[in-house]
Length: 398
Image: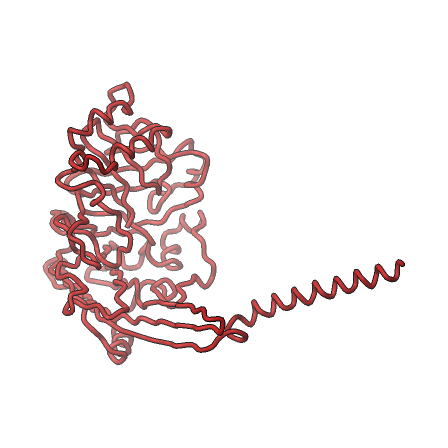
C-alpha cells in the first residue's frame, strides 16, 4: 500500500515538474518559437525644425526623428505592435554654457505641416537649462506667456515638421550636436532603463551625478490660476474655513462636492472661467505633441477648444534642487507656488524623492510664502487651492 502511494506521489510530482518545465520553456523561448506566423519591421522618418533666439542670436533646432514599428502576427490570429521613436528627447548645448531640450511629437504616421496634420501655430516643448553639464533642473517654456515674459531667455518664431528619409536620419545622426541625454533615456523601441536605476535619496543629493545617470527630469510642474465666476462663489462659500484666510484648501471630505461645483456641466454658463469652460483648460497629456496656446491650438491634433490660461511656477521641497537632508523626518513638506508677473508662463522641471509622496501625510501649500489652510491630498494630485472666493489654482504637470 505504501509503495503504491509512493508511486502515485512520484507520478504527480513528475506531472507538476513537466508542467513547470513547459511553462518556463514557453516563457524563455517566447511565443515566437511556437506561435509566430510572421514579423514585419517598418520605419518612417520626419524632421522637426524649431526657430528660437537667445541673446539676440538665432538658435535653430533641426532634429530628424526615426520611428520604428514591429508588427508580430501569431498563429492563433492575434498580433502585437511595438512602436518607438528616436530621439524623443533631445538636449543640446547653446552659447554661454546653457542648454535646451526639445521633445519631439509622435508623428510616425507621416504627419507634417504641409499636409495639415501639424498646425501652423504648433508650440513645441522647449526646456531651458542654465548649465549644459547639469540637466537635473530646468524651466519649461509652457505657454505663449513664457516667451513674452521680460525675464525670458528665449524668443520663439515658429516650428514645422517635414518629411525625411532614412538617408536624412543617418546624416543627422552622424553630424548633429551631441545629445546630452543618455541614449537609453532619449527614446528607443524599448525605452527601458538598462540598469534599473532609481531616484534614491543619495542620488538626489548629488544633482550632477543624478543628471549624468538619468538625463533630464521626466516632468515639469506649474499651477494654473483662473478667476472664479461670480455665479459659483456662493456655492463655494460653504466650503471655505470660518477664519478669513487668504488661501485655503478644501477639507478632504469636501473634495468631491467642490469638484461637483466646479466641473458640473449644467448650467454651462455658470462654469465659464475667464471666457472658457473649466473643462477646456486641459492638462498636457502628451507634451511632445505641443503645448496649448491662450487662443487655442498649438497642439497635435489641433484643437481650438483647449486653451492655456495664466500659468505660474510650482515647486516641491522634496524635489531637486530644493531637497535637503533630513526632510524625511520633518512633520510636513511644502509645495510652493510662485505667483508673480515674472514667473508667468513657465514651469519648473524636476525629479523628486517620491518616497516622501507616499508617506502617511499630506503636503502643505504656500503661495508667495503665505501658508494655506488645510493640506493637499498629495503633491502629484490634481489639487485645487483657492484665493478667498476670487481665484482657483489648479495643479499642472507637463
